[in-house]
Amino acid sequence: MNCRHFGRCGSCSSYDLEYEEALNIKKIRVLELIGSYIGNELEVFKSPNSAHRARAEFKIWHKEGIAHYAMSNIDKNGVELLSQCPKVIEPISDIWEELLKYINSVEILKHKLFSLEYLGSLNGELLVTLIYHKKLDSSWEISAKELQDKFNISLIGRARKQKIVLDKGYIEETLDIDSITYRYRYYEGGFTQPNPYINKEMISWAKECIKDNGDDFLEAYCGLGNFTIVLSKYFKKVLATEISSNSIKAAKENCILNNINNIEFVRLNAEETASALNKDREFRRLKDIELDDYNFSTILVDPPRAGLDESSLKLAQKFKYIVYISCNPTTLARDLEELNKTHRVIKSAMFDQFPYTTHIESGVYLVRRDNEK
Image 1 (cartoon, one colour):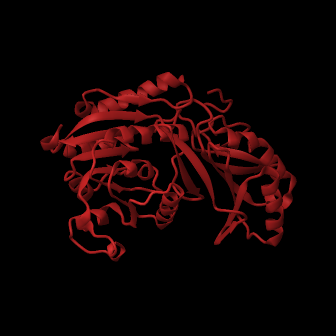
Image 2 (cartoon, one colour; image 1 turned 90 degrees about the vertical axis):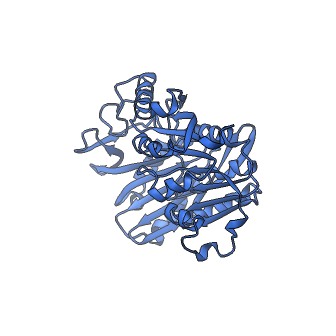
Image 3 (spheres, rainbow, N blue to C red; image 1 turned 120 degrees about the horizontal axis):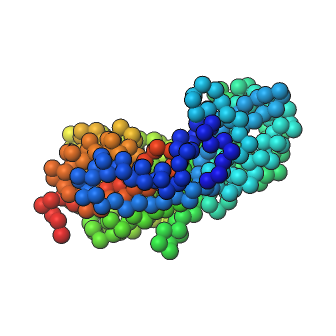
């Protein structure tokens, strides 16, 4: 990826390396941490080295009356004004320059604007959020509607204790996974995978791991159903849990979009999920779900950087099969030390979700030692 801001913009920390070199450093890091559990067998999924990021947030920096895109600089002691960002997907890059030029031409849109966020899809839909240090009024709405119509986007305005949705607060994405098309609704402010190309590889890899397992499926940290929607077709019944009520709302809508009716999405965090399944306590949110009717074979966990808590680890160890998607190989290594007592890793992968950074996404598939085929 050629970018004139390499070495100054803090968004890309591996700016001084060729893509393959940076990727290999990540692979070495993963193998150093978990190589003893995976037998040094690591499948690596490469990202496009440009136009791969569908979610992007930019500072807006005002200089001599002009609003500029900006990022924190690499030394974290100032900002780098941006004239390009080759990382963003084409629906964003196609309007990136002209959109800000238009905002600069309309004072009410430019005034006290301090952040601009993009959420895009591979099928061309685009949601833009403008964030302000001022109260937004009807005059702003009129000008914002003209901006929305000119660029054929969905637009949201945010300010302190204000959120104005001019059209809709989401986009729809379509992902082709092994010749099947799935539809997803992505809401502004909700978590979505930032790299759609790698996201498809992650889902497909997880599908290949579990497709022959049968029985029922549990997913913790399910989000908006990113994995759940695709994997559900390989199980009789699915229970998926997530702490965010907005993500649960989106997940249920995604079930409808894909005509899926064997998933129960429930708002529980990981610790609560373990407590419910261990029957340590009852939850009103589960009052219409009979947990005893499930015959779970497989669990998928996709925890935050902190990894799994103790109760979630113990719960996972009760399952025949575990898919663990990790955004932090250090906590993955820590958790594998415990999981290795009951399970063995039979597949592992690294997904380059964030090229030109040190961030690493990886996955392992484990089978319980007393149940290996």
